[in-house]
Amino acid sequence: MPSSSLSLATDAADLASATTEKTNLLGMTPQALIDFFQTLGEKSFRATQVLKWMHHYGVDDFSQMTDLSKGLRQRLSEVAEIRAPKVVYHHYSEDGTRKWVLEVDAGSYVETVLIPAESHRRTLCVSSQVGCSLDCSFCSTGKQGFQRNLSAAEIIGQVWVAQRSFGPRKDTSNRPVTNVVMMGMGEPLLNYEPVLDAMRLMLDDKGYGLSKRRVTLSTSGVVPMIERLGDDIDVSLAISLHAATDELRNELVPINKKYNIDALITACQGYLKKCGDKRVITIEYTLIDGVNDSVTDAKVLAQRLQSLPCKINLIPFNPFPNTQYRKPSRNRVMAFQQALYDLGYTATIRSTRGDDIDAACGQLVGQVQDKTRRSAKYQQVIATSAP
Ligand code: SAH
Ligand code: SF4
Image (cartoon, protein in one colour):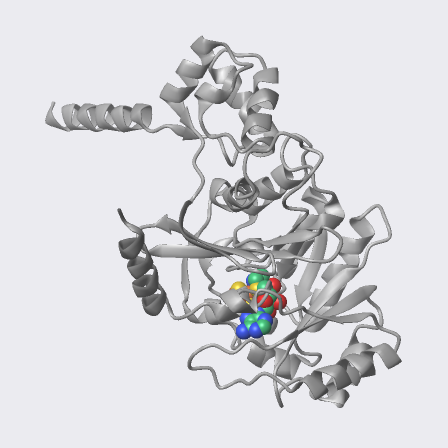
C-alpha cells in the first residue's frame, strides 16, 4: 500500500541518517558513557579510559588512545566522535586572560573567557545558551533574544578548549583551569539538564576534578530550578540580585515579576540547607550609575540580605552600544563597598583584568555587541584568517 511503503521509505531514511550520525562522546557523563560502551558490548572500565583521554589529556582522536585495542579504536572512530564547538577566534592577552569565540551553528557564536587571578587561579567563564530569553535591561545578551540552548558537549567543550590551549597535558596534577563560573551568555537554569551534565563532568575526577567550591552556577533567580538544583548537585551558587527592592528589580531583572526577592531568598536558604558544609551564597550586584549605586541602596541591600549567609560581588556596569545606563565613578563604587563593609558584609569589586581584549568575567555578556555586528566581525576574522 502506498501509505505503508511511504512510511517504510521514511523509516529506512531515518535509519540511514541514524546510522551515519556519529555519537559525540564529549558531553556524556560517566554513567552515560558506561551505557554507551555497554551497547557496544564493551566493559564499563572503557568509559573511564575514554573519559580520561578526553578530559584529562584533551585527546579527540581515538587512534591516540593507546590503552584501547586497535579493534576498539577502529570501531569507535566509525560510530563515535569527540567534538567540541569550533573556535573561530581567540585572543590571549598580556595579563594572561584568554578569550575564545566559538561557533555553535552557522552564524551563531558564544564566548568563553579565562581570567587569571593571584596564586595560580584561573577562572573560566562559561556560556550556557546562545542569547537569553530573560531580557535583563542592563545585559546585552538579553538584548539579543534567545536563539537556542547549548548541548552538554558544547558547554563542557568550552572547558576542553580552554584546557587544550595550554598544550598537551602529561601531568594531571597541574590544572590549566582551576575554577569554572557559569556566568557567560545565557541563563543556566533554563538549560537545566545539559548544564547539570556538564557540571557533573567538571566535578568528576575522571572529568576535570574540580571541587564543588570551584564550580559556580550563576542565576538571575529561576526559583523552582534553584530548589531542584539543590537536590541534584552540590556546587556554589551565585545570585544576580542587582536591586534590593522588588520595584527596582522588576525593572532590571524582569524575572523578578514571577519570582520576587522574598521567594528568591527563601530558595537560597533552602539551597544552603541542602549543602553539607558551611557555605554562603554569592550575591552579584551590578552597579549602575544613578540607578542602584547610592549609599542608601547599599544600606537597603544590607538590610534585605540579613537572613542570608552571603558575600557580595560588586560588578561596575559594563556599557555596550545603545544602552541608556552608565558605569558609576570609582568613588561611587568605593563608597558603596564601604557602606557594606560598615554593615558587616564581605564585598569585593570584580577585577577588570582582560580589558585589553574586551573580556572580564561577568562583564563578558556586557561586552557582547549586537548580533549582526558580531557576525560581520567574526565572518571578517574567518575570511582574513582563511588560507
Ligand atoms: N544568566 C545568568 C548568568 C550569566 S550573566 C545570570 O544572570 O546570573 C553573568 C553576570 O553578569 C550576571 O550577574 C549579570 O547580571 C552580569 N551582567 C550582565 N550584563 C552586565 C553588564 N552590562 N555589566 C556588568 N555585569 C553584567
Ligand atoms: Fe540572561 Fe543573565 Fe543577561 Fe539576565 S543577566 S539577560 S539572565 S544572561
